[in-house]
Every structure is written in C-alpha cells, then in structure tokens.
Length: 221
Image (cartoon, rainbow, N blue to C red; front, top):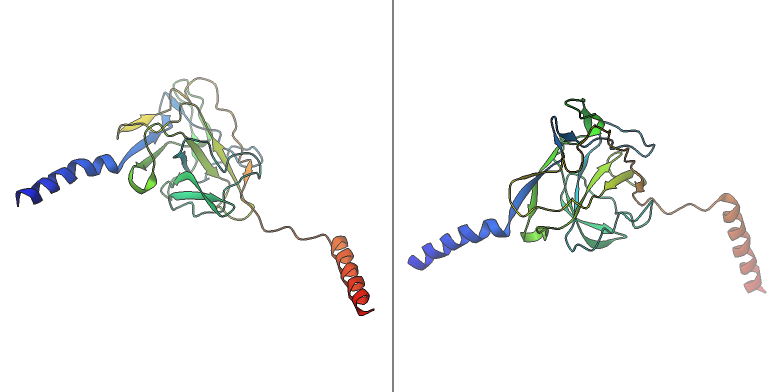
C-alpha cells in the first residue's frame, strides 16, 4: 500500500514536468501591441486566424523557406500537431489558437501607435510529452489569409527573441519586440500552400496529341 501511495505521489510530481504549458503574449496595453499582420497584397487585415509554429529540433523551419518553396501542406488550423511538407512529416509543431482568436485592430494609446492586423496572446502552448516542445525551442508566428486550402496564403514572422520559456507562466514580447512609438512594419502573407498540379496549356496538349498519333501510325507500319 505504501508503495502504491509513493508511486501516486511521484507521478504527481513528475507529470507536470513532462507535460506543462506556457502563455505567449504579444500585446500589452500601453507597452506595445503586435500589429501589421497583412494579407498577400500587403494590407494589414483584421479577422485572420493565427497561431505559432515551434521548431522542436531547433534546426529551422521546413515551411518558411520562401514563396511557394518548401511550403507546408494544407492542414486543419484548429488542430495542433506536427506539420508536413510534400507529405513528409517535419519537426515543426503547429500550436492552434482557439477558433475565436482573430487578428484585430489595436487603438493607439500611451505612445503605442497600434493599428490593424493585431494579435494579443496564445494560451496554452503545451510542451513536453507528445509535442516534443522544450524550453528554448524557437518559434514563429503564423497567420492565414483565409482558411488553409490549396493555393491560399499564409505568413510567418520570426525573431531572435522568440524562444519557448522554461517556466509555466506568461512570457510577454510586447515591450521587447513590439514596443515603441513607431508602427510595426507590414508583414504580408507571402507563402503559399501547394496547389493542384498545373494543367498543360492547350497548345502543349495539341502537340502531345499529335505526338501520340504519330507514334500510333509508326507502330502500325
């Protein structure tokens, strides 16, 4: 019986260490708010979904290499999990924000210019366990021009200070990254989810058809 009680006690201590969570805050009233998250046309837009992507192996991001190069496969933006590129799983873990979280307008106050396309806080960001997220893993903010779908756009923002904290409290980047009297730069959604295979042009289709006809008569002879 004592052994059983000891195991329960040990589990109560170890379990939180294995699976915990943190909150990442990007806006604090009067200090700084993260704004300027824009669509593909470079217009700061309210109403886009957003979350964070954590590089659990700290070796970079497989889906942020440039426009339509190494883009993440389409995924459910409401569901957290490892993302894939070209059907191959990566070490990049997407932390989904609650569906109610949208980019919004932040009014100017106390020297903070505010603006459209603003984000505030994401909670919880789990670490340990199946997520493989650990302290000091780098992360990026990701936002979607629309619901992720074939050929739709998304954007990613990195910063050297974007690291998963080791404690289970709230870590704010409002002052260190987004504070100051100058408006945040526009951040366009310049990455594209892979689309369907391109359809050959009509002229190429005709050439292909003539080639097949010629091959058919050649074999007949």
